[in-house]
Length: 231
Length: 231
Image (cartoon, rainbow over all chains, first blue to last red; front, side, top):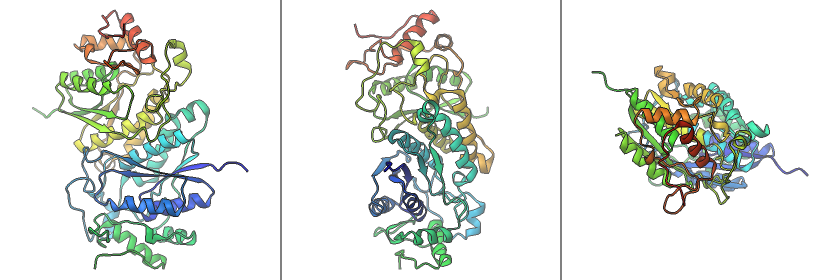
């Protein structure tokens, strides 16, 4: 039996990355789960990423500490307030203050480094360009450009001809389709966390962009929402 | 008088990045110096980057801690030995064990994030594709691909039309030309550090790739070499 191919999966502990991990697992990859501690306000996502890694029995779960607060410029890492109660239409037309400069570029750069170091075939990222917050680094053209850059960046690709593929399996799915796909693969979404501004007990606020997208996703998918919201 | 444009300069405290910083300063940019503490064996490069930042009276000097040892895969961050006594011809044909997977991709990703957060016009990186160690992420095609990706990654570029330019002013210069250019701009290379494997006192080994390139560069430039080598 051939050894399994390895996949580095960027994991935030949210719905999208967890579903992407389920898909990679289903395709037979050995999972290398990669999370980032970047001083985010919603730190309980790291606990969720840990639960998800355990759930999928990953080969390795690595949490990389990133110094993003020194860089600043975002409501998620600095002392700015997270917007609440926005409509989905607003999210689609305006890049919000929760945008973190360079975040997916940095996450994918680390993914690339780890993928090369462990000889992984691909990096899996759960970005989605349908029901999303309008971040520029979640769009298909960004992912394609990162792939082109990655093909020129690594020793693996340049010297040995082993390109590392960027997989973004959720790119063109709605949130409802993502949840349906994950539910069909047996994902327990009760393990996941999405809220940008949870209570001290880790309950979801229900009103930030991330909560709004999540709640509407479960409704549209016809799947019971296991999220614990603040009363 | 218009405010100066800002440049984020990636600074390792070595000859190349210091010369690139001198050029940016000479062009009138306000300098935001960015260095990385990535568990490198040659930590005294961080002290050199600090000295260089002071020398150029930068607007801000930021040292970002990077968790590269967890990723592994390089003689510079893991417990592998640094090659010594290689000829320049060997360096040009073989990517050595001192290659750090994804390093320049990660460095530029952080540069991009900081450039966006402080509203800088450019990122300056002192990569050089002539007298170099054969790293894939020092080549012009890599820099061009990163630029294309960056143009799609940031809110600044996508929403506001403010692209962040990647400047690699040393790309096609020999080490001797770099040193001559820096000397003409008044750079004190005695402040800089290049050795991959310095002594505990910070003296250069004289035999690693980086020392060999540096030493030959000063010879060819006809500039006195201020480096303190182990006896």
